[in-house]
Picture 1 (cartoon, each protein chain N blue to C red):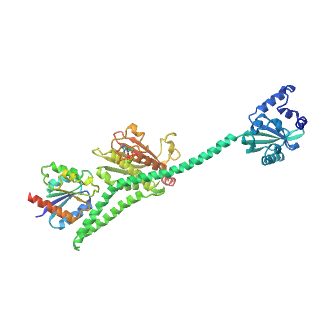
Picture 2: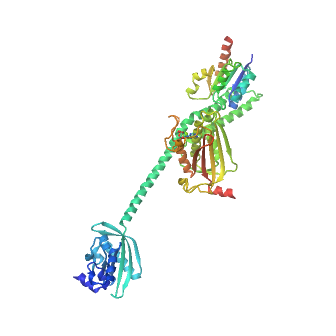
Picture 3: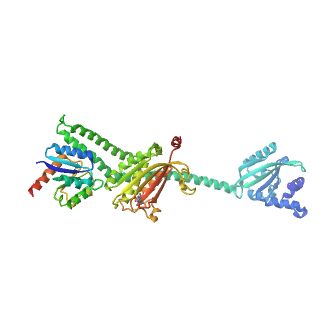
Length: 129
Length: 431
Ligand SMILES: Nc1ncnc2c1ncn2[C@@H]1O[C@H](COP(=O)(O)OP(=O)(O)O)[C@@H](O)[C@H]1O
Ligand SMILES: [Mg+2]
């Protein structure tokens, strides 16, 4: 079964390569949204199984996107994994992650193997519920 | 006494100029002349050239200057009154005056006096033929300029101290500028690291993709390689930007396009702008002249101003920075305004104006007076040092420019930096 992943990140090149890598596995269908302000609309349209969310983005940051998803009955239950290139501890604190309703946070540069494992886990726990 | 004999032989007026003359015995005209001579504010003396330059006149001021009383001076020559060196010099001048029959001015000469020590004189000597007495006189006027000379020496010493202090100050200022820059570098480093991590993340994904084995028919491969190459270039540009920015160099002016420099600076603070969700609207007039700029230092100016703007707009819904660069002819400077730059900027000069506007909270009238004071900050420790704007101003001054900070009518701050277009460029434009 092909799972749908929505990637919200303003880094065009990065998202393009992420999509290629994920789709190469044959297990995922990936949609990229580079403009965070359009993330909700795209999510409604695409109805992904999981969202990969960058934290630092112009317009609306990852935290805002996650919070709005929480407020949206249609999107509330979609698991979110955050990604960030931020370096300092406080900015990547688990608190912030939990607050945003995300289940995990991955540091950039993202290790593909780790990401794939994360995705597996996310779907496994979902299936288990 | 020899002295009295001599006086009797001399012309009557001169004799009477001696202080012992009995005024009652002479006409009021002569008495009047005597009084005038004695009350002159300059030393007046006369020597008889035909009688081995013995003194025949020695007024009151001359007594004061030399600490030699008239009675003692009259009838004597320089060798009997002054040190051999001084006397020799005076005599040489006297002989010159007689030989050339012309006035001679000694703008500074020095005599040793028992009471006042070294006394500096400004002396003018003239030859006068005393027809009646059938002799030639050297008449001299001496002004005591000791105080002036001392004042001048002190001034020279002070000036030397001042020059030294000034040099020291300049060194210190350069150090301060560099210290402030390193502070900024520290603050920017996290953001710059973030900006570098993005291309690194892309590279890693590229490597992951390709390491699975390259399928020659896969259309993605070429695309990925292009992306990877661009990512390396981008990371390099960002890192190089920070390294160039932090380099410590002597002031090195080079002809530069201001917009290029602005774009570099925007790259350095890109992360801060993104985090603050700041929209940047930069508008550069076309065909701007090159300016003489020390790039690393001027980037420091721009980074400071941009970061200040970002800080000021933290609670804004739509934070926006507008940057405008345009060429203009300077006008509206009054003479007294901008005293410090009066040498450098004048009405009618070709200038480039850099305007940087934000829509933050603005600056209260009271604080507006203080923003250029070192260490004045309204920010928490760890965020503000209060050194940004003083350093900005110093650097702008090093560029012979002018900075103006004012509140915008509808909120926020507008900074204007005026920089003079170098002559060669100005001529090129006017052609
Ligand atoms: N664009 C701006 N908007 C509002 N206030 C400003 C702006 N720029 C500077 N200021 C004020 O001037 C003060 C001094 O600025 P600066 O010398 O750069 O030091 P710092 O930024 O470390 O506080 C700031 O603390 C702030 O109060
Ligand atoms: Mg500052």
